[in-house]
Length: 402
Figure 1: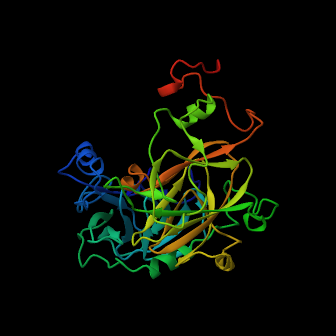
Figure 2: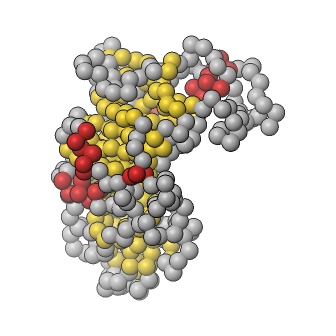
Figure 3: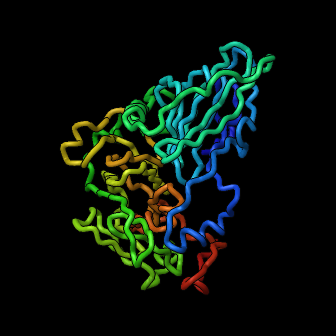
């Protein structure tokens, strides 16, 4: 997991501290070697050697704070395979933001952050002046990896001491309850849809339900990953170019079903799902595997209205949060569980829906959602840029003179 840049965009009395950057790494193996040796040969990635915070190993990075001041930490998990738990010894984490959405300011002792997710916390330097551990450890992993940084009080004369603060490792229930506690702050300032007007997400009936189930099939004797039984393979021409220039034979709409198949068969395909501009859809991510899934949708934010264990059914809608669900672009699905989202298709284009687990994404757990409008209006979608790189079957085509 990695931390992002400081939150200088917020105007408040809070000081801004460059947040911790935590990620998984393989120090003895290069990415190219990993790709060739493991993924291209049809094998899963090996377990990583460790975690880093802002590119540093154990106690390798220091955050200096002044006593009595409050700091914003924006923490992002930019790892490629594992959820993490973040915590600061003897300090509380006050959640204030999730991927651009202001939240109710709940306080936590530790917080689970899944692949691709970002959170902002307020941390007050209100403890005895000394050094404290900033900790990140793996969650739901076969082996617990831990790394630390240092929270250093500017007047400290004492180094870190005591045991590293405890956090859950394999337990699902605490993480699920924590995720459900994240609510949108409807009274906070900031850009967001009108919570009281006709746009309110909980008052709109979805036009259809799309169910997406991940799987880990073997195809032609090699490990692949799939969505609704389809393992994505990239085409010889970028899909947006093929769609814009109407190049035949690159992809077929409907090449991935909108619901999981009844059997276990899986196949390779350049999978593209059709959708209409201004549809309002319910998407259910169903996970029957024993690993946490993390999903990202390009070009959109969506409302995470519900998540629970087991099989999703229409009765599951009774548990939906239709009042103050947070708007975000990445969500987790717990093992043998489901997560439901509401999403307004207000962005014309060809959009990638993918696993945030790098190996799963590379080996096929992704597809494209083509959101179509017959209007062909610049109001809905800008024309292709003049400097766009035209490759594959689009080579030699002409763009508009903009």
